[in-house]
Amino acid sequence: MSICGFVDLQVNGYAGVSFSSTAHSSEDFKNAIRVVFKKSGCVAILVTVITSSWKVYERNLPMLASICESEEFLGRVLGIHLEGPFISTKTGALGCHPKDCVLLPNLKRFKRLQKLCRGHLKMMTMAAEIPGSVEVCREAVASNVCVSLGHQLASESEIDKMVGHVSLFCTL
Image (cartoon, rainbow, N blue to C red; front, side):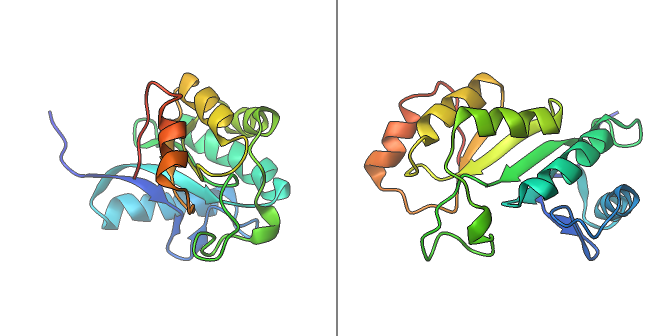
């Protein structure tokens, strides 16, 4: 049997529920995901958390990891997409991300986020021009995490430097 449908790599929430908010419960997250599958034509998604405080990451990422592991969503919620926190704070790149939560990329922070995701971190959006981004990108790719360039104002040479240090890379 084959199933046709869309795979959405960035679902920040749905039906009034944000995966980056502490105002919503795990059950709220599950209900929002159910509505995504019912109404959007998606057969699989990545749940996405934008640049947030550590309080949000520590609360929401394990909840989302549990959803990825649940029998109901196995094979449909393919993992977690972190859109940030390693992005540019410059005007034109920041978007709706809270500037005070943007962090400089380093391996310790990346590994902490990975641990909170319990192996379900599948994509990370980051800026190529930020110091430390090449090292984190290299570690992410080595950990089978797709790196997407976004919320950045990187030059062509900064992007080339990032791409030149990895064997697998994707941009969205």
